[in-house]
Amino acid sequence: VESDFATNLAKEETEEEDAQSSYDQMTQENKVTTVAKEQDAKYKVQESKSLDTTIAEVSADRGTSNTELAAVDEYNAKIKDRCVAKPETYEDREAKREAEISGLKQALSVLEDESAFLQRKRHARRSFRGSALIAQ
Image (tube, rainbow, N blue to C red; front, side, top):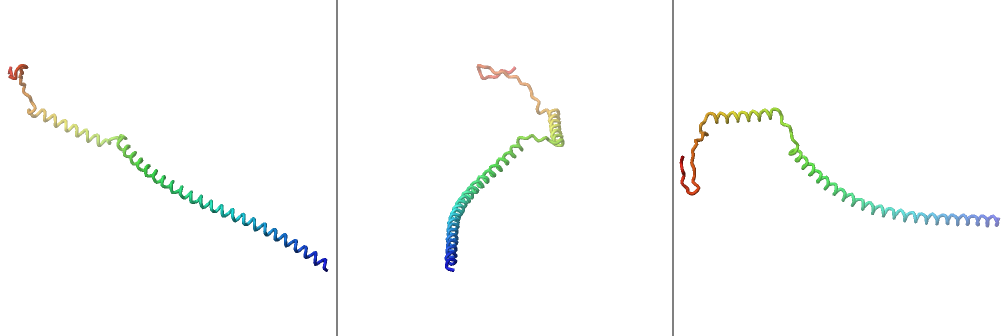
């Protein structure tokens, strides 16, 4: 009975030592894993802050670029309005032609009817040596 007791005691002590060793190894692995995960979390927080800063800068740049693009598009539209020839409608051309024809008819009638524009010939010759006029 004593030998069974000693054998069981030795077996139990060996199992206890193996369990303690296994526990110590697992605890050490958990500590290493915890430290690694804390470092990963720390670096990810730093990376997140860096990315947030980059996002803010890029968003500001994008806003500036969009403002510039809107200004350029507006300027381009104004230039196109001034530079692109727009065809006149038939009604516009006809109205201009009628106005021009009526103006020319009115001018012709004024020139034919009124003698106010007639000039009389007057011959006068100046002497180059004096200021007297010589009438012919």
